Length: 295
Ligand code: GLN
Image 1 (spheres, rainbow, N blue to C red):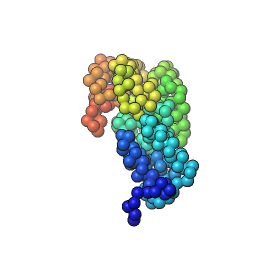
Image 2 (cartoon, rainbow, N blue to C red):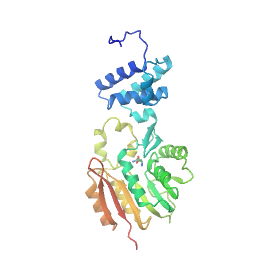
Image 3 (cartoon, rainbow, N blue to C red):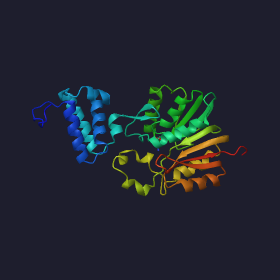
Image 4 (tube, rainbow, N blue to C red):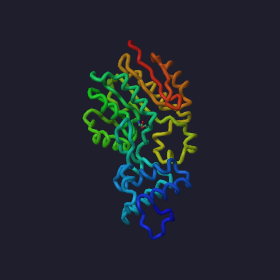
């Protein structure tokens, strides 16, 4: 094995490209340099990461090299890797994502898990997901609970286009119904639910400009929770009481500094069994309450 540096005329093989990109990403402070290089190169060559390593000496064609370079440029300009790949895995399923939707986060999988715990497998249930974005919450619940009928709303028509495509691709489009509009506004009057779930925008407007540049490439609408970040959470807590069946569950994701405030809101709105749960980083992340059995 030669240890000499590659000559300029040497072909760009998988090995050489991975090494070069890792080094370059490292210098430019891109997160997870090696992994990012592997994912981007894999997406151009349509190879899984492990397959790259089985074919390290494969040279790239001119076209492949040009497509790869274009992705590298976009990543260096701050575009999130998941937008470049066009995909993010969530709760074990691949979701298509692009700049129209928030990239699903692993914390949100905890929210899905909590909802699933409340939904027995062999019973029908009606579930509503507010601010559905990519549809990751609504679609995961529908996929895991075959008897569930899931409704989902989002104010962004662009986001709903992504969510609908995801529901179809993941085979649950017959059981997920999408509505465009602000929170409960598009939901037919009188419709009530066993579970209302939401990961709404919850970042304070003033904090948006200080976010990581990758996050700033995500839709502002999906992040901006108003002056104190609590505007949408507050509306959901207030309005969900009229939309939950007696004993129905409200399950919310929130910011790590919002646990106390949301707990107070839930208690004030007379929810029962109010509790705040932490994520794997031990930060407040989820809130739950049940609708009173007699309203
Ligand atoms: N429900 C989607 C998610 O959890 C979108 C959330 C949002 O846009 N705020 O990823």
